[in-house]
Length: 339
Ligand SMILES: Nc1ncnc2c1ncn2[C@@H]1O[C@H](COP(=O)(O)OP(=O)(O)OP(=O)(O)O)[C@@H](O)[C@H]1O
Ligand SMILES: [Mg+2]
Image 1 (cartoon, rainbow, N blue to C red):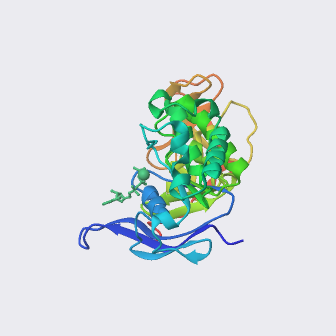
Image 2: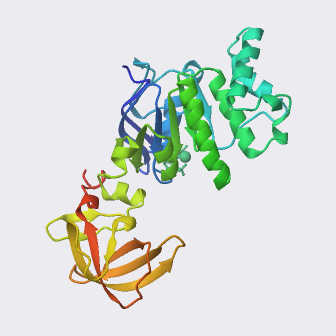
């Protein structure tokens, strides 16, 4: 099946040649039809620039953008049939909710009955039919974001672009709205691309996740494949791996604190690497303690964090630490370093 959106070696620089900033470098991307794709990465890694190039608001410095298999690099935004939802809701304050949702449909010159039907349908999809006659100012943040979503969906775009649409909402509402976004995408079968710097959001929503680092693609795949097997230190770090020891016979590896085990005396060892260590710090976290240890014999100050559910040892105590083989991830080079 032709990907809905394809980027072929797309780059974008800002500024004059001497001190130009490479916002996006040599990016290849194929966005699968009917799926939820997320662009994930730290601030400034080029997520918004990528989205704006797909929408047509920013031109690539080089490379091609294909929509539905056809070269659309030079196609103006209004000819791309793309729906967008931004971090700020960008609703028209003087218009009612239903008129906000209908705006894009009217702009496309659809017949009045068609406009009414589709706007009503979109509003129902986000559960806000009862508020159709209100103005945006009389809605909560979460409700306004739903209206923005309804407005983008109403035009039946070939791709829905979402730029951190949940980042203005408080933590609880954000989690609720994630589920809502996923439901709307599934029910409509839309192809969606969401930009976020929140790994939990990306893991929960994505069929396909794309991790960017300084404008370059660092790793992509299904969350279930990427999360347990980060390919580089950058990705591991970004996904919450906190331990990066260099182990004899393994080289540089990554392991999550919740996978590091403190062995009680006499406990048989599972397959893995066992280290003698000294506890240096303990922090209470409610459901567990984070025990910080110094691994003796691993060279200067190899610090390891262990999320320990039981009673924690005290600073200064000698412990044995197990790094189970099943959870040791061998790291490749970061995309940048590899070049
Ligand atoms: N119009 C512009 N003019 C100059 N530089 C720009 C412009 N837009 C983006 N940049 C630069 O390009 C880089 C990528 O920016 P972009 O907005 O794509 O990042 P982002 O990943 O969306 O970050 P954030 O998570 O903070 O929104 C940054 O260094 C930014 O300063
Ligand atoms: Mg951005």
